[in-house]
Image (tube, rainbow, N blue to C red; front, side):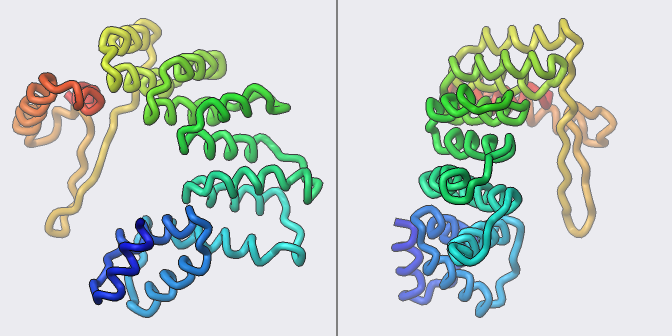
Length: 271
């Protein structure tokens, strides 16, 4: 569908922007369309488009898949090569190809996967919503899962609504780093997203009782060439009262709609 729309834009002389190009490159990688990816890349070059982080990341992913395909039979890939290509597969949503490459490590290249490769396989499954398979990999991998592996599962559970697995992953995170706020915050967001506000509040209370604090979120924006920095709940900000008033209005409006529960939780963090 994406590639069809992109082709239609080209035929009708519609000028694509960076976002369109990046999405098209990702779509090409996802369907294994390396040739389409090359054509899009060449169009980016011909149009002398400015490559931002989003488009650049997409082009790197398609290039990694292309180079790995060209390596077959000529160059022996090593552990670093497999990390790069599995990362590209996970970014592009190229799940089946990533699984095939992971399996080829031992079967074809006699290379034993390390924890970083298992972590990428878990991320590959989890990000695409195949959480049962991600959990199966974790249960059967020959080494103890790392914090980042359990963290990727919790993050995927937030997107795909698997509360049971999220709770298990959270318990494992607590065993590894009981005072790390990331797991608490993610599980709290998951509960809030899926309408379990009381459970979300209990997680927050548990954080407070243990003295676990989430680092204040921050952001920067450039307006008329001037940098403006914002930190959550920063009363030193000159327009703090005005910002707080707007946030309270947004929070009030979102409270009445269950569809905005996840955003509401974020606003509660900001206020």
